[in-house]
Image (cartoon, rainbow, N blue to C red; front, side, top):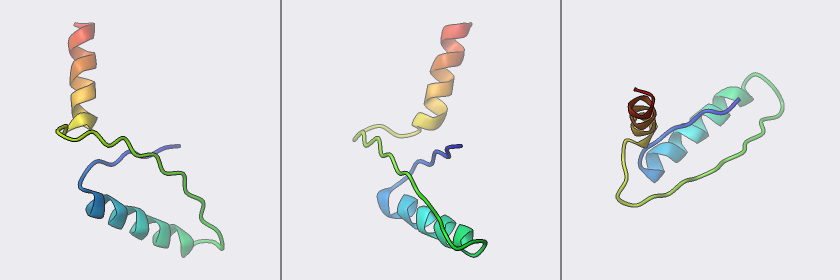
Length: 58
């Protein structure tokens, strides 16, 4: 039950805010758990991890 997003800080937090607001329209309570993995110099890790796994399996 987790969703991963990757991007610039302000863009990611805007997505979190809009998702929270959207969920809040359907109930009286919204709970969030946020985890950040901040790695300067790294981008594309969502697909990169899959690429490395597929390479290891082949």
